[in-house]
Length: 217
Ligand SMILES: [Zn+2]
Image (cartoon, rainbow, N blue to C red; front, side, top):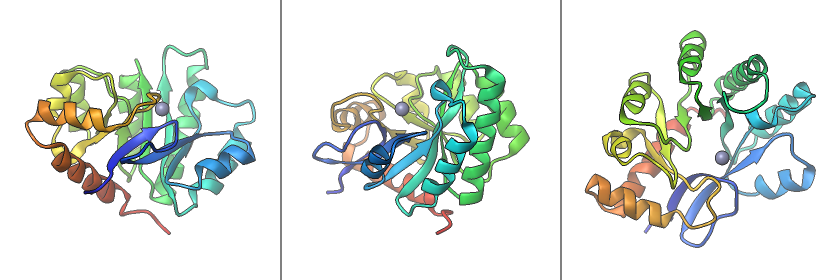
């Protein structure tokens, strides 16, 4: 049986899962080396926008070229963090552009900025898949994002109705900050969707292949 795919986490894999670890930039050499030794995503989070953004973007461009770099992110927009919103928007757009030029999907953190997210997507028309990570929104928001082509990645806290309505081809599961294995989430999600955890995992693995097939090596 395939290991369970954990689409987004801030820790090493636990037994039974394959994890895409997140590298928050800027990062020190030790942390970069540790995380890039396995599959990873890398991005500048709106909570931690550094004063020297250009330097962090250079680090991002460098690690994004790594063959084990699966995605750019998490990057995004957050209305409840103190970082000036204009700065968040600028960094978000630059990271989306980098995702486009490297052919990597984007992992998106979005808190109370859905209109701005949709406006940015409409304006920049990213040619790569955009995955909303840790999606907790209600069904109406889920439907709107799905209509606009987004993928949804659900973590330990989610709206069951939104999880149920997400088409199989647009879904991921993740633990994010949670230390436990992702397998419990596969069991819960599978019973909500009326399928087996194994078939749900096979679908998520296929979705990952779909969104990463544009990666330019
Ligand atoms: Zn995260």
